[in-house]
Image (cartoon, rainbow, N blue to C red; front, side, top):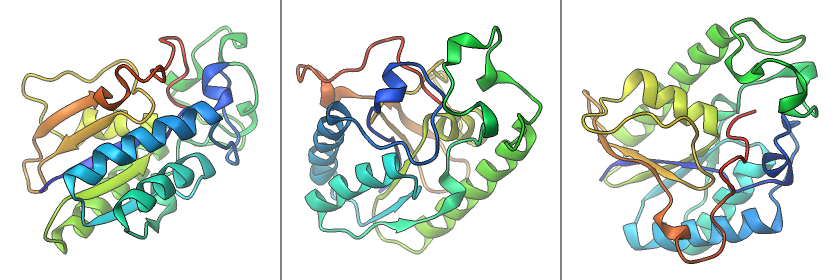
Length: 204
């Protein structure tokens, strides 16, 4: 009975390494990934789902809902970092790594603002899990999961990966100190032909 963070399925803009507008949907490949993740989660018998309401996360949560019979609740706290006016542009065209930038891009979030929101999101999730008798599934975005792993979960023998794979599971115990159970695990995609390219963008 844990908290399982699930990154959304692949989008066409992930695959093309483009910073994504908020309304970016899953690709057909991403929908397939979400269905494989949902089948794996069904066997783990979660009791609740909370999700970002951005379309790529929401569609992933809806696939999980179909398999589990659970209705997802939504929160904007789980949104991906807002890259403002940089969204819609290729990541590799900037000459720097916008995902690592500390300052806020025009009309976007600074790293400090984003990290604070992730703290609030993690507290929200932990609070929800405290009211449940079972596993909580959290559907969100690559940088959110990366930030939570980096700041509020004791990793033990695990390490924070450079990138979070599409539909990968990162799982922790529900009580303080929150200990990692698995990190960036996409075993459900093995042999499916749906594993993502290694250069696909994680975050943004």
